Image (spheres, rainbow, N blue to C red):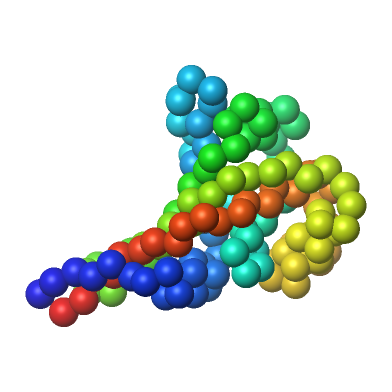
Amino acid sequence: MFNTEMDQVEARSRFASARVARLATADRDGVPHLVPVTFDVDGDTVAFVIDHKPKKTLNLRRLRNIADNPRVSLLVDEYADDWNSLWWARADGTAEIVEAGARRDRAVGRLSERYDQYRENPPQGPAVLIAVSAWSGWAYTA
């Protein structure tokens, strides 16, 4: 048995097929922060939006971190007790917070096509657009 790294095309494809990703940000001192996000892949851009789900505050740490340090990573994975089907895919890039305009509207529209909850209650918060500079991944194979 052996494992294999994915090429960028396969990593992007597997990433795009996932329903949730883990977003890793870090503040200006390098202190990490990890949260799950729903997302959309549009070419080499990953988008997520601040939605209506209950939050303690709208001054979210992920947004503060991106403002201070726009380098981010997103990870999706598949776990199964049959380890022959394990895989993960990662997108590394630079994030931009977009409060309004056509780019935000496109992200919200695409996310609304992907998630029923957004069709019923479109997000009102800012979008985060991540220009992916590297797609990578790994899969266990027999």
